[in-house]
Length: 637
Ligand code: WTA
Image (cartoon, rainbow, N blue to C red):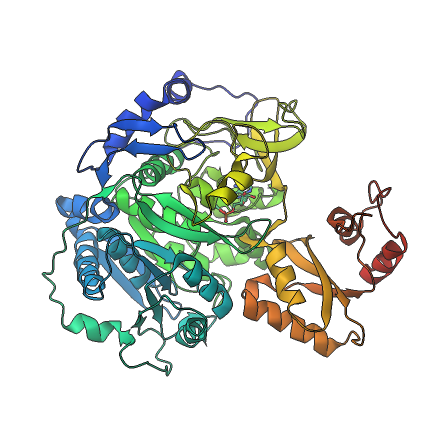
């Protein structure tokens, strides 16, 4: 590809400029044309309906099916014998599914779902480890028009229960257990606990994965392998022709307030967006072996492990376990073994490998790699350089993709499939065609180049969320109220003199811990559910590997005293209520939290103290300045 990372000048070719211009000036015509890359059963009547702003609807009246576009489309061609999924288990076993194999399994599972009475529009919850059954169930659900909601298998029973209750899922699919660092995570057991708090689930399908003993409830729980014994390999379930705006999935994600929001996406608009953004950003083709390391429990896995690669008929690699297990070179050995050409991971993973050192990389032949990607959090220039030089040997461009659960697919990203602009370590470069992004000041004015402000998106795009499940008000309030007529993603950003965007982290109370999205509010409510806790405030502390980690400040109720045991209890409580990823790195017991006179916790002060900043900013509104001294001495500054 011959791409150098940094050049003096940025020259946008006519082709790139033209595409961006067309997409923004004449979006309906642009997307009318682009959407035809997918197979539709019926073409839309209107490309964009903006009559119910901000509930924009794309490809209105069109009929489509996601499973058809990922499978049937390829099975009709030579690709039927092409490998669709390469799966590697944590213990080293390998399974490969051709497009034909995947088609067969998805049809069989779709027929099972039907037998359980699942119909178009019903929700099914998938609480599964990274095993091929996960995409198989997703595609099977999509095939019959059911809406999947995947719950990350690192989440606790409470988190699972919340998601089941909010989506009113009728069916739960889980596994006996999943492997993580050689240990078994007892998923069925966790699911059973969740089911004690839910009412909607009628049946549970259990995949046998880890072989650990489980409790099966007669009449409610069924083993997948037993069910499949009765389903022929010739089973064919006609894909349901769903409306373009029929929800394909709900995926819960953290926000500033309350419990996680059910972000739900359309079928047509989402697929069109994922299809094109993937092509534009990474430009992969039939020879490529693509590996996106994200867990399918997050949006990155939905769009770029499953739907994007399969729509394009690519070979997508799925790995079950931890990237550094059993040794720090596991990741490099997988790339070498399978000849991975496109590799997409998080800055946290890169920083972790960097710490292990380049010797581990050099044990392996990584010459198959030709393109690298980064996602989930800002990438610091040191990690970028290391990724570029040590992993990519200075010849693979780094596609730093900025986007969110809500956006469905990439928004701001280098575009190897159109024109690769000179890269700058730490910048996602410029918006993809169809994305009109800007940086605003506090007051909603365009921020001058070089200054930090709030990222905004000024036009609807096909991959945008349909809304927040069951809560249209929250959709408007969260995303469309901060600045008039703009979608507000909740990120700080800066645009430089060349028009490049630099994403500077969350502007709200959302943390990105090891690229995972976690709300501080969720951690706080877990903490205050403990009888000893009167108040809690959680903030993000910069961390050299994970980007940031949660740190908690806790005020105890009368009669309770801080102890290691209590700290342990609180940490476990967070783990049980949300999941181990949300565990605070530190808990500080304090007598008082810094608050404004109107009683609001001054998080920025807590953040400044934890970061050891000299200046704590404006303290004129603080209710009781003595809180500060205690905090400083505790944190050790
Ligand atoms: C952050 C993950 C900087 C950002 C796809 C965003 C990034 C949040 C980048 C969404 C990037 C994602 N550079 N920050 N390349 N990609 N983010 O919903 O704060 O889990 O708002 O989606 O991750 O997280 P989510």
